[in-house]
Length: 116
Image 1: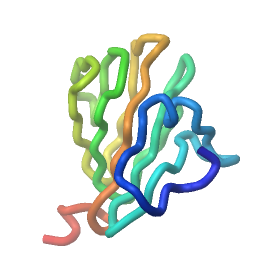
Image 2: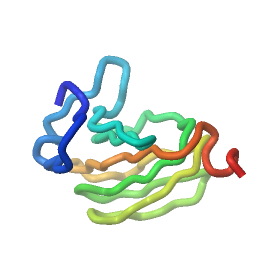
Image 3: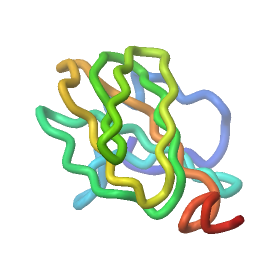
């Protein structure tokens, strides 16, 4: 996908796997609606992401590995859902070659902690 989906409710995994990130981005933009941004992320060899301004959920589409969040380690496999609070240092490690995940950003800048 070279452009965000703006209508419709079905986004096929096969189509997301073909989506290319915009220049300078690590993940492909898929959908933005109602304060939620959906991206698709499939790092190659190493995860170079930095902490984000909003809370996020990862829905693992395929593969396996370990998510490290502020030093805590969470093994995952396809179908798992992982959460990361805004501003937390995190990265995927020891992930399989086929690893790919949906990324859902939600809530205010600074995350739920900042809103309370």
